[in-house]
Length: 497
Image 1 (cartoon, one colour):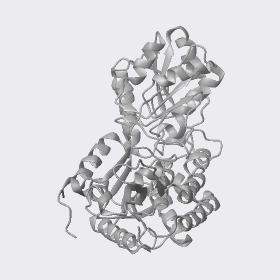
Image 2 (cartoon, rainbow, N blue to C red):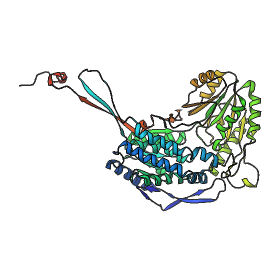
Image 3 (cartoon, rainbow, N blue to C red):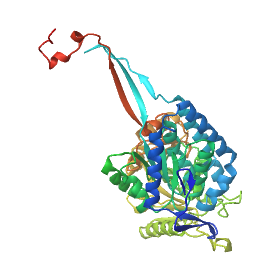
Image 4 (tube, rainbow, N blue to C red):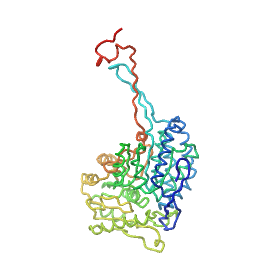
């Protein structure tokens, strides 16, 4: 671990296993509540000292720019740290998991210098003339609980705004993927972030994560992960009424309109579902297809998906790597078996790829399911695997209804050549991000988060620092004489003399 500017070991350790070979990659410290408490104590001490919290925003920005530069310089090494632990393919890691790290961190570095930490507000001269300003102060000590699928990038979505605003932060990494964020903590301190401001702890979620969420000296907790765990985070945080932001599950609906360009849409739909073996909360895993073109769309999806190359994630030619663990593989295959019992048709895949190269590793074939209805478990629950559910609709109104009929509302999409029509449909979809004719288009300058049980608050965008600051109103009364004040609302007798 990395606590208070130092590397810290533990009595127990995790074994980090390669998802593609099942070989031991390394061991990692298994942190405890005591380690979490130590990190929080250091974070509070650093915050109160002002070593970072009272730094000029321009100085914080300068140091954060240095960190962004280092993330770019070390992209290859960071990519290897990610791939070895979560099984992302090298193309996907360098394009998304690690490739977006430096520009996203740079965005928050720029925010540190441009965010309106102080603004003056014009007011009416009633009841008295006054000067009013709004200050945005850092909340204090933040805790970030980060998942295994995009540890570096999703960590940056929390670390970046927390540091830009002047907070201290303790990051709890997933036990399967600690390596890239540990390196980021080292880089940050090498670039000038003071000790105690940014610590990384490991440990089981039910122990260490729960402690951070309920810790009385943590002022804000940010979590990305499952909706079930998000509910528990919210419950634990309520004990001290701390600020909470949650980015949770999704079951993204892609609405294919009858005028879509199928050459573009077929590839785009598979990209939206199969990227990183479907292990992305915002994946487009429900495809809504008009009755009239259903069979043609399924045929073309199956033909195109057969060309997806499954294999070694370190091979640049590989399209689809393994899922992250044996447990995840069994979970996804269990969803597929349940869907078959519910009468769903497996149009493609549905199992483990055949061949000696797949005797080791946690691989799942690209899978396309048809005859799916929106009430089935496979259409309702977040599968987190390379599984596309195809649902029929007979009218656009029905498609919108199906898309919105979900506990989730993280992302959705529309495929159409008629942009006015597509935007009209997009405006009716209840999700935090709607993509038209693409998927996975994440921009750090635009807010990201979900409706309903997909989360609370937004990450990224110009308002990202709002989640990591408290608004303070400072009122200066400019009245110069007693008789012009309104104190006589209580003190009706004039003062003597």
